[in-house]
Length: 236
Image 1 (cartoon, rainbow, N blue to C red):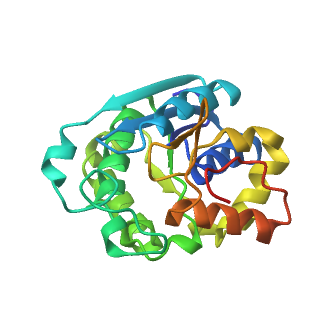
Image 2: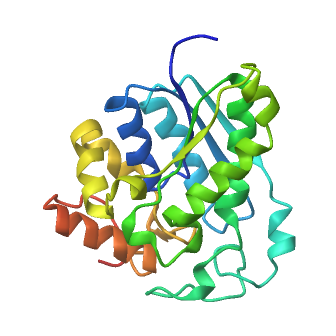
């Protein structure tokens, strides 16, 4: 096996996953391959931004995985895929997409095993613990389960053991992660798309709404980090 460390980074196009990917590349010195998912989300624009940000990060490879069939399965279970539900301005269980991270991590790990990567990265931090699939217990459990699924090849040295990593495992919160990302990428972080909606058209521009829970958390993180938020919102 080659000695180069390779990470498969799940990047939605949002602020957290962008900063986590930049951290792994710059501070942990991993070569990165970036994967993003089209799962029927309302915020299609995040996929566009993910592609642009992958170029900015000089990723070795970038893939968009089409699992839009999940939208039909999810039905009205959550606001991120159902246009018939209103997006809240503060945390509500309607924001939680059923086992979304488990699906993403499983597919990313299949890619990792296929290319002998040894790390799968996603952007969960300690402020995300409202979401069960962002907690360390979940990460440890799915890591163990996915390695068991390939344990014979791992024992025989054919495949590397996979680690699933997120900033939450190092006790990093949202604004700390933001500061790390800004140190590495500068104003490129403002190209990320946090909004749960697909944006609002103001004149000729499509802007992040500024009102949903994710936009509000984004604003708060910049304030706590002491960084001027250069994002243009439809509503400040």
